[in-house]
Length: 411
Image 1: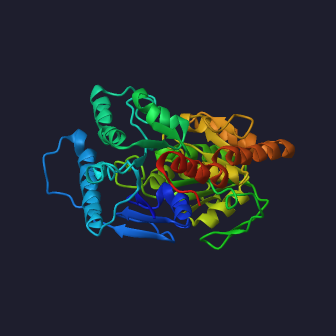
Image 2: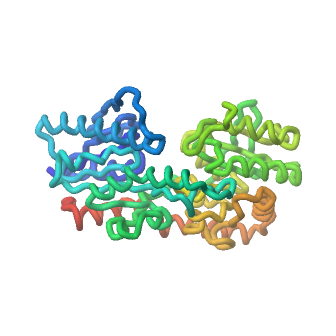
Image 3: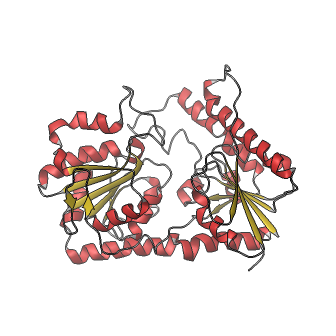
């Protein structure tokens, strides 16, 4: 029996499809270790652990996140020790490095190969820091950002192999570690995320958005600057003024997944609604909150044009899934996006910091001749099929690596 242990505090995360596939293979046992699992996966034995932290300390400000990662790693290690006492020893560990969970597992099982998922290497320039607004970064801030990579560097040293989902994300890592990092996206289910007939969208007030209406869509896990929410809202005021029949459908929560909340304790949605005031026709701006995945797919099928904005940061699954649905995509010309989107071929690129240019890009997409729009949409979907498809490259890429390099038995 070949035993695989996944370590991800929010399991399954990026490992959903791989874990599901491995669990269905004869002769393979799959376990997962998580502190805050999002869902269980059929065939996977889930081991939950509690993250323990010490009392208050005088931790250096640069090390607050690192200290939390140490506690997370220590807690995961303690849970693995308990599992090992039952006689369990994996043949392979696959884990996400970002929260520190994989840092000490090699100290328990030094001869067990470990693959780490490395999502983002922090940079004092050339990525998210100092990007919005574009400002010089202080020496103190550069030092703080450099220290954030303590967890990444310990993880890179501990792992036998690293995986990065996009070339842009991989190339953020130091050159001396590049030979340890494999470019491998977890995959997009292009059968689920696909063009198709759209259902009417019933809104909270009982009104309905119908197929054929002019609808611009915007989706983010949370409505915050890292995903360009502030730029989108400022562009929307101009766009909605110019097109009186247009509706804007916005999906996402009011928290913050990445950057800080507003300094006044409000939400970014409240901040932008207050800033724009009467310039924004509220009856045509629809906040949907978090939506189930099936509703997201339907929203993409309803969409006349879909807007995706991001800092130079981790690329969202939502953009790739939107492209797989065949949307007319307007996206920011930032590093992770331009790796995928070619202006005028499979989408339109706009400068992140210019709301007027974003509005102009959306109007260009909406006014595009139907034949040209069809070509753009078809190319968007084909890009995802060719480069990110779950069944063609995502799971097969992982399996090929596990078979060739880590002894996973063939079915």
